[in-house]
Length: 137
Image 1: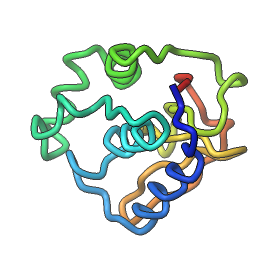
Image 2: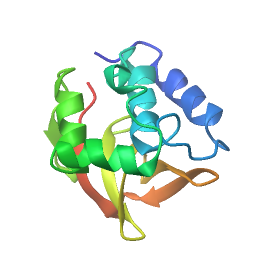
Image 3: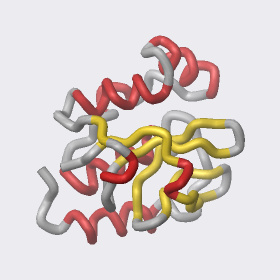
């Protein structure tokens, strides 16, 4: 369930990572999206996975072991009761996967954009790039 002050908490989380460099296992697309979920609900769905990867190779191994990024995110979020939804139904604070530069990246919906971590800080990608989405209620 969304916390009463989830909007303020989500904005604070995003501002805290605005200029943060990309670091596997600390500030990557999955940890950023999980941090947004925690800001909105108070629950960090990635908590059991911290420390299990710290570079691209180990992250890819975990993601491939789950059948790809969408299935990995779906499994992690379903453990907390959050389910997939269609792109048009996504609202502010929901998690989604977008395609960007031949990659798939997780982020959080903010209006007409999706905020995702880049190499040297957060960046906005159009919602038109959404491939999958999860409703965070």
